[in-house]
Length: 479
Image (spheres, rainbow, N blue to C red):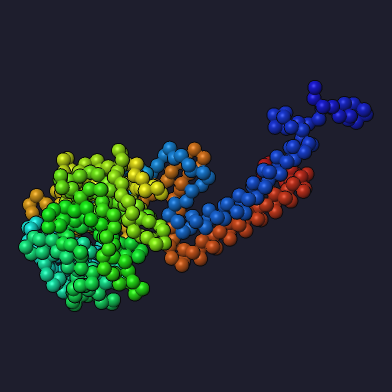
């Protein structure tokens, strides 16, 4: 039976109940529920909405609520035709072929490319796949628009080199090994320091102290925080499994190479990427030809052997490359490994990517057809370089021979500008950048907080003077 109360004149009346009769209107439980609701409303008005107003001003999109599962997604058209929405993490957007004025002065393939300061350098290479050249080209990077400038020729290498390894350490460019004019692997290392202001190179000098222990061409090079890691490559007798490290001294100068644990199989023409304490080597060829096997070297964390590769492993099922590739282009960005084009069964200019987890495991390689190279740009031995949010493929070999062309793709797809989820939504924002956007965002946020504070005061007055509020509302509704 419902609880009874003694009314006027001793009559019993039913006590008022709320929430579908579950709670007593004058009980502590209902009071607690109302307090929680008012507390949530105050937090939303004075905290959440001003915060959203600030980010609405400076961000292109903002999240409202908890948009965990989106059932409606709308993406900007600049992501490109055929690109799914939302774009898979790590995907490469459709490629753009650079205009003729941004092509290399001469067709090249098998060269090395590095970014030195604000300039991209294309070093050595070949015009026909065998004869090495010594020319070096430089192109200033226009980072604000993600593009290059016309190439100019700078000081050539002391000797021709093809399939050399190159890196920039402490502002100095090092060109390591490679095949000479006779097609033989070399032990030489050339170094040059570009001008800080202009990026110009006036002279290359042999770095005899950094000469390789044995001749190598097509080796894989990775830059670590404390030095250089050089693995594999072709020696006088073919592909090798060697692994060497050059440690930096106190001035940032690489020292003599020291051996580490050999790879479990021979590899040349591959790509090396250091991700945390793991060195991944993928693509290229073994002594049996192009291979899909991904090798992983585990670096030591012990003080006495820090940075040394102590052991190697091979990729497990599901982490190997979908297809063996020879002459492919490889690069890494934001912890993701990429491999593009090259030759192999059904290669067709495909671009694959994989993101190792924190344990160094690869669960599989992904492909998005819209991000593959176009049919008329099936490159081999093209040099890849990442600058900002773009990757550039410079030169390379097509079915017609070496090319001077340039291709570019974005590695930063635009997120959906509108999403509708089960518990929230993503909506477009103003996206006002710079200092103006920051100051305007503070003003908008303060304005929303002030308006909400005034609203709370009015609500409090309305509850304090309920009768007057009812009469005021009644007069307004009767008008």
